[in-house]
Image (tube, rainbow, N blue to C red; front, top):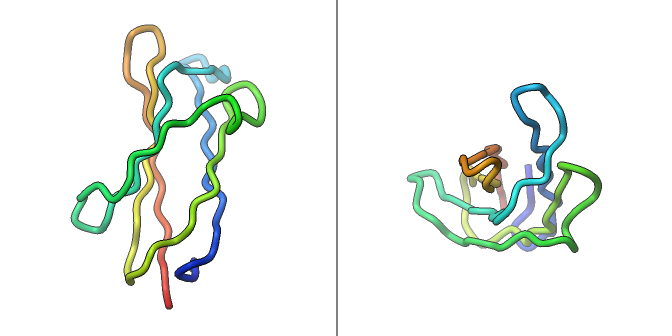
Length: 91
């Protein structure tokens, strides 16, 4: 559970169908509420890269309660690639 106002680190690892790590282009991070409404859309760049295919973002948990969902997305071989996760927040 994440505390409101705290910073959490969100991670993603992108892999292709052969299970090889890949670096997609145009990487974005969406934060969604429980109803699927977008709260934020964040561009991920090389400063967020840990290794081939591995990225992170330090996110400050906003006010409110309930689950938030995060979706990392990008383009690989002209096709979309996505990874989704969630976290709960409390005051």
